[in-house]
Image (cartoon, rainbow, N blue to C red; front, side, top):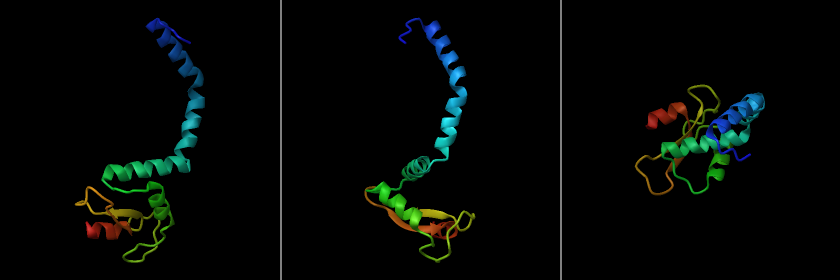
Length: 111
């Protein structure tokens, strides 16, 4: 489909988009809810926050398997105060800097 005329290419792209809009929507809706996307998003967020790690897959598995706060031993869930947080040392910028998997409440107290 090498269209050299920019006007024809633009029109072709517009028609293709309209024709496949629903199919694309459905694909992205499924992907957004997939475990692969959740894992990718969480690891990306950790990197953005400055968390450093040598094995992201292992860290993610440990994070998922942790059921209780490592400081106060409260059960972790989706509640605001008891949701899981990955605590790290902000002053360490050149090596592994993760300290605990905590509840949000303990993470704020340590901050």
